[in-house]
Amino acid sequence: MSLEADLTRWALTPDGAAIRTPSSDLMPVRWQGRAAMLKVARSAEEMRGHDLMLWLDGQGAARVFKREGAALLLERLEPMPSLANWALAGQDDAATRVLCGAAAGVHATRTQPWPELPGLPRWFRSLEAAQGQGEGFTLAWATAQRLLSDPRDVRPLHGDLHHGNVLRSPQRGWLVIDPKGLIGERTFDFANMLCNPAPDHALRPGRLDRQSALIALEAGLDRARLLAWVGAYAGLSAAWHLEDGQEEQAGQSLTISALAHSLL
Image (cartoon, rainbow, N blue to C red; front, side):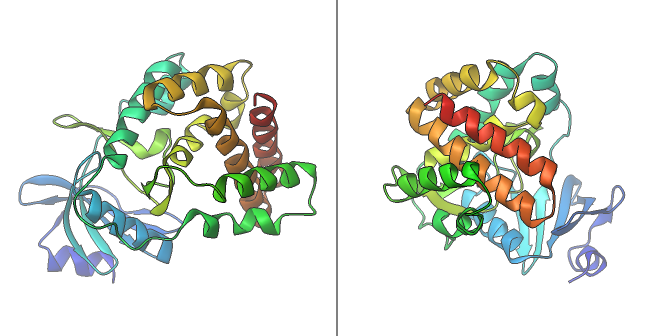
């Protein structure tokens, strides 16, 4: 389904230039006088994200106005202020607290049955496949196996919760967008926060130590288990970078993984 077809079907008025990402086509629009975002998924992963957005039902997330097939019409959020800019400009603690608040909305208990979403073990197949590529992958996979074999506080997860996927509504505050949609341990959703908003920032002296302690306090997590998930997730991220031929980025992710393991 094309953007043009959905514009006609839902009587939408373009309100900005179309945006193409590796997995979706997007366009800012107006719908019944409201600012909205039209998003058409081009991958199964993005379609699962649509399923989770429907299930979240606007609690902690952008509201879904309409959904049909690959097309989603969403509440449009503001790109500024930017949590990434906050973190990079010395307001890391404030950005982290916002991220934890957004996560709480996603993780809140709901009465409706969970959507059918993949479990975390499926996601970690790339890390398993990277075995033999170096000690960093071996350590990260061992940690991942330990965590995945003993999941705690399992629930639907955003799956890609970081500074760029939490935006502000002037009326409703900070809300998530662009979930991957997973089922797994709640603590996993906080690992990516500590790898962002940029590898250089994540690796600043003392940053992982301080922000992991803050997240553990804000979200009620076991800090050692959070650091273990960072070690596993950063290893997974490195494996994905290798699959894409991005050796430099893979090395940065492995360095984050090693740093997380050193703090355990």
